Amino acid sequence: MLGIQLTLSGTYSFFRIPYNSLLMDSYPFPPRTTAIGLLAAAMGYDEKKFFDLLEKVKYGVIIESPGQIASELASIFKEKKVPIYPITKNFYYRPVYKLFYASEDENIIYEAERGLKDPAFVLTLGDSENLFYPQTPNYSRVFDNVKPVSSNSVECVLPSDIYAKFANGHFSKIRDDFYPPREINISVGFSGEGKKRRSVLGRVTYYSGIRIQLKDPLQVYDFDGNGVYLF
Image (spheres, rainbow, N blue to C red):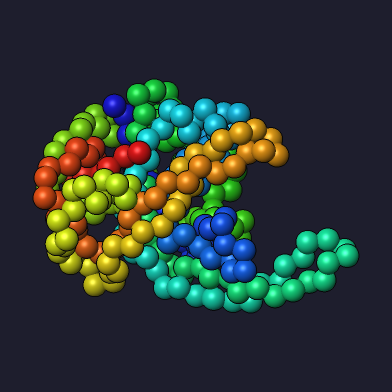
């Protein structure tokens, strides 16, 4: 199976949590739909092709650096009859994420590689003003043979049912900026069409700067030494 790794970085990131109403809060990493949407933007895909991409691409993520949480008061304007009101907005300062994608369709990966080098649309970390600033010229890399392997430890985000089944409660610190495992619901897909379209949520366990030890070997995909669980 072909795969590609993207190191995503920028000054700020804001991946809005859709089910918060009184607070504009951000996911601490790009959820699946956003990460695959980033590929679709680079490739110049329309909405129909994006939904097709969601079905054909697997995704995984390592939070390389969570960044610092920052807050501001944002002005919300709905319509002329409704007054502008302030609401707190939380976002992340200087985060770094490693995004991993794999597909049985090799054309998708090669097209994604070309798109990431010369994007059809501007790539952002959530909000339109949070631009993607590559740390190095080699911010993306294609892997010709992404194989499933067994691993006794992982550094990537895991679906919470997998974490509950395999994690043994121990971890080792690998970076100074870290935080322990936490759970959150992220958007992994969509249901319905048009105005009836809704996010399909999946519960995941995320963390940063540590390796989770596993009580039983878990099948992950090998990206040149990075064992990543894809979903």
